[in-house]
Amino acid sequence: EAGVTQSPTHLIKTRGQQATLRCSPISGHTSVYWYQQALGLGLQFLLWYDEGEERNRGNFPPRFSGRQFPNYSSELNVNALELEDSALYLCASSFNDQETQYFGPGTRLLVL
Amino acid sequence: DQQVKQNSPSLSVQEGRISILNCDYTNSMFDYFLWYKKYPAEGPTFLISISSIKDKNEDGRFTVFLNKSAKHLSLHIVPSQPGDSAVYFCAASAHNQGGKLIFGQGTELSVKP
Image (cartoon, rainbow over all chains, first blue to last red):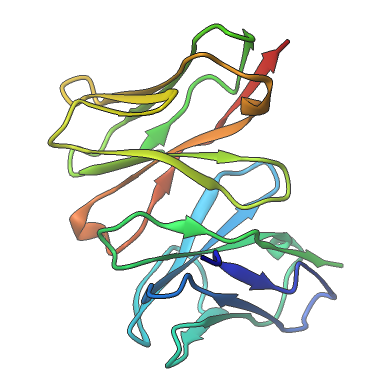
């Protein structure tokens, strides 16, 4: 069974640009979560999508947004990139919000 | 406000011995706890979990203990192997927190041959 996949693996952008990160969940999982791991910091919850709807978001500004498609894959968009947005962005999926979350390999975003 | 804390940033253990990783939490609403293992530049790998209605869960070499009164959980790895060397994160969630996992800062385990 394929795990959670994310693309691209690495992304380099300049300040002010927009970044789009993609995630495909494990087959059968309808919930997708996004987390940020900035350098030296722990994993911080960003967003939770389920059945195409945003269900919860963490303490991040509105320029962090996303969506979930009918096939349950998801996109994370970061607008007006700032240097401190440089981080590893992790996607996870689960059957529902009460079940174990399984993580993908992450996308490393570097903002110059 | 750090609701999940791993106070030991690193731990070094001899191969074959027991590794004990600790985690403390402050939110009494947490009802599900997980341990993940992470290598640099990779996503966390799920190891083991425990519901708040239990005090122990075992899976092979990994055992998680939960002490609700002390708001403390621990992960025991027996016997430790060099391949266990990684950063270990504990995480917690609550029914009313909308799918959000709260992670500790991680403990880097080094198992020496």
